[in-house]
Length: 301
Image (cartoon, rainbow, N blue to C red; front, side, top):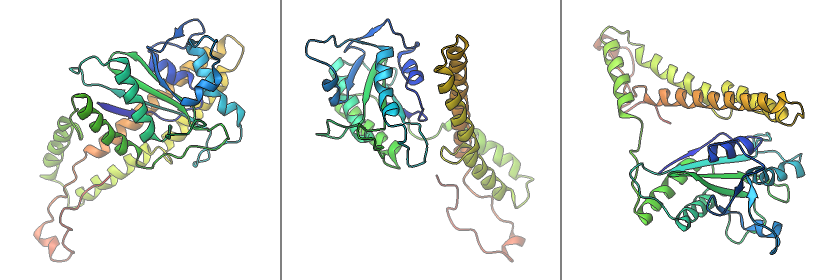
């Protein structure tokens, strides 16, 4: 299993469309075979004699309601991107899972992610969508009914990775190859070794500085690309609300641009991680006047 956390957004429409593999619709009903799990408080919004099959557009509106009911709620980073989205993907050779198995995975991921807490019927709204083969998407609004913001663990992705390993063991699923792409790492190492044959003593320092620069550009909280992406997402959300015919189309185009920006961030971060971490040996003449390098020094994440 591989889990990926998407950048938080303002509207659930684009994440839900990504989960379904098609745009949200006001005509298509999503049954329990597609929405395999949801927050326990949903039962208060559905009467016993009421039809429980909602359209994808209705699910999106349901997830979006807390953002409109609490217009002044903001995250610890002082933003309004309350829609959290993560997807879990099985190994291609894994068996087909049953509905209850998908539901179990959803609830376990939701608990670790902090969007579902045992016994909390007034927690944040979330749903789990299983609409594509071997894939499960979780969508949540991090604003609770009382207007407070759900605070997630700072090391959420590693914690979710640990839970995925446990789920694999419990359900007899395959575990993916962990760590960076070995082919990419080998390519960078080969380039570095070639360059070091005629490089100056400062080559290792330059590599470290370049890796740091790439991480700054890709940083989700303070990086310039994240800022630009946030502005694009905000513009897309506003255009999507316009009644004019061009509004939704332009908003959808901006959402696609925001996704590409996030892909650029991920590529930059992967490039920084794949840069060689072993410092170049210091020439003998330099060792006489400088302090010895720290053993095992290298880039850390």
